[in-house]
Length: 565
Image 1 (cartoon, one colour):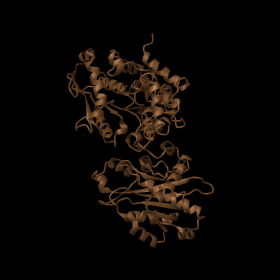
Image 2 (cartoon, one colour; image 1 turned 90 degrees about the horizontal axis):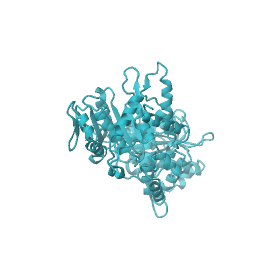
Image 3 (spheres, helix red, strand yellow; image 1 turned 135 degrees about the horizontal axis):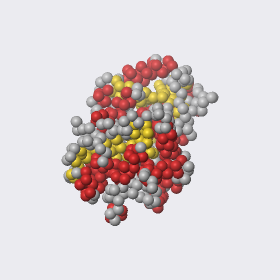
Image 4 (cartoon, one colour; image 1 turned 180 degrees about the vertical axis):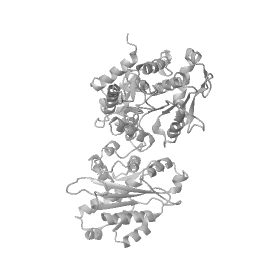
C-alpha cells in the first residue's frame, strides 16, 4: 500500500502535464518540471533542499478531513476532496524542506487561478492547518485584505469548517469566537485583518485573497516584515488576475513568471499560474480548459461557455470574462489596449544606442501638482522597423513623502528604481523638465517637441529660444484620434519597443478609449488615480512623427501648411 497516496496523485498529475496528457499552459508545465528537476538536484549533497513526502501528505490529509461550507457538497455534509492539481498546487510545496534543519523551503505560495475553481476552500484549509496542526507555538494566522468583506472571504469558511468539526475543536483545543479563533493552550490565534496588522504582530501565516484588488503592497510588506521572528512562515497568495497592470499583484505575477522561466532565481517561492497561453484565442475551448483546472468539477463547462458567448456581445462583459475566467490581465475594466500584445514588445534600444538618431518628443504637463510625462519617440530606420520609446516622469516629492496620493507606494517604488524624478516642494519644478529637454537636444536629433499649451506655454517659449521646434498640440479629438489608432495598430504589429517600463505599462493599462459617433477615439481614464499622461505624450509624439514622415521630412513646408486645432 502506498504510504503517500496524495503525493502520488499530485506527482502523477505533474507527469501527465509534462507528457501532454493534461492540457495546461506553459507556466504549469514549467512548475511541474521544476518539482522533478529539483528532486533530481536534491540527490546532490551540495543541493540545500530535499522533498519530504510525509510533510506534504500530512497537509493533504488534514485539509480533506474538513467539510465543505458552500453549495451542494456542503448540503450533503461532504468533506473536501482535493483534486490532483490541488494537491500539487497547495500541498506539495509543504514537502520541500531545507536539508540543514528540515524547516520549510518555501515562504511564499502563489496560487493564480480563476474564480469557481475552489480557491476559498484551499485557502481556508491551509489557513486552518497553519493555525492548528503546523506545530508552531503561538501561531498567528491572518486573513488579510483591504476590505472587511474580502478579509472574511477566507476566514468565514475556515471558521465554519472548525465549527462543523467537533473532533478538531476538541483535539486542538480551539475556541471559536464571533470574529476570531484561538487555542488556549499556546495562545495561537486566527483572525481577519483589514489593512495592516497591529504593532507586535508576528504572522506565522498570512493569507492574501484576491491580491489584485490591493492598490499597493503595504499589507503584503507589513505581513512579510512581521514574519521575521518565525522559522518557517507562509505567505499564501491566492488570486485571479485583475485590472491593475503594474500594481503589486501584477508585479508578483511577473516575478513568478520570470522565476519559472529561469530568468530570476527565487528559491523560496512556489508559484502555480493557471490561465490561457498568449497565443490561445480568448473565445476558444482550449483557453477555458487551461485557465480552469476544475473544469466540469466545481465550475461547469456549460457555465463557462455561456459566459464566453455573453462576452462576445459586450466589450465590458468581455473584459470581466477574460479577467475572472481566463486569468488575463486586461488593464482598465474598459481597457483600450491589448496588454498581452503590449507585453510582447520587441527589445528596446538604449538611449546610448540611439545617440544622434531622429527623435520626436511628447510633453504632457497635466498639472503641476501631479504626474507629468516626457516621452522620447525614435522612429524606424532603414535597418530597424520599430519605434523605440523612452520616458521621463516628474512628480512633486510632497505627494510621495506625505502620502497625499493613492499611488504614493507605487511612486516610492519607482523612485527607488530610478524611474521617477521627484522635485522638491508641492508642485513640479519645470526647471527639471527644461534641463532634461536641453540634455536630449544635445544628444539626439530632436525634430519636434509637441506640447499642450494649457500648462506649458512659458516653458515652450523658453525652450524654443534655445533652438527647439515647439509644436502646440491641444488635446482635441481632431489631434488625438488618428495617432491613437496608429499607436494601437503598431502595438498589435509588435513595433513599439517600450522596454516594459513599469510606469508606462501601468499607464497603458489605464487608458480607456472614448468613441464618438464618427468613430473618432480619445484617450481617457476611469478614475483620477489611473494616470495616463505617458501614453498621452506618446500619442502626441507619434502624431508628429507620422505627419513629419508624410511630409517627406520637409519641416518648413510642413509648418507652413499646419493647422493648429
